[in-house]
Image (tube, rainbow, N blue to C red; front, side):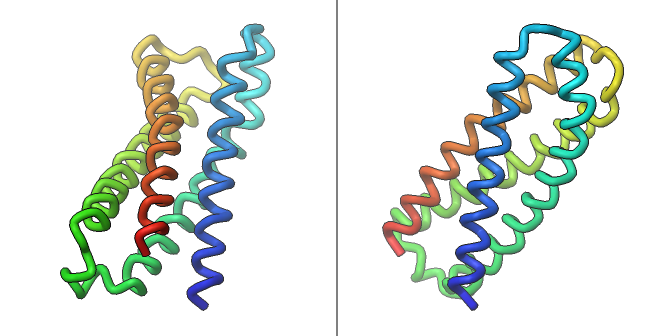
Length: 148
C-alpha cells in the first residue's frame, strides 16, 4: 500500500509541476492578446479544476506518507537535517496551496473579461510564486527521500 501511495504522490507531483510549467511558458510565449484570451478562456478553468484535484491528491498522499513514516508521533525521527527539510517543505506546501487558491479565485472570477491591474499583479505574482516554489519543493522532496 505504501508504495502505491508514494507512486500516486510522485505522479501527482509530476502532473502538478508539468502542468504549471506548460501554462507558465504559454503565458510568456503567447504575445497575441486575442490568442491568449481564447486559450486561457477554454484551458484555464479546465486546468484549474484538474490541478485543484491534483493538489488535493498531493495533500492527502503527502499527509499519509508523513504519518506512515512516523513523523507525527516520533520526534526522534526528525534528525536535524531531515526535520529541517520536512518543516521547510511543509511550510512551502502551505504557501503554494494559499497561492493556488488565490490564483484560482482571481483567474476564474476574471475568466472571459479583462483583468483589473490589481488582478493582473496578483495573478502573475501567484503564478510566478507557484512556478518557483514547485522546483524548491521538488528539491526538498529529493533531499527527504535521500535521507529516508
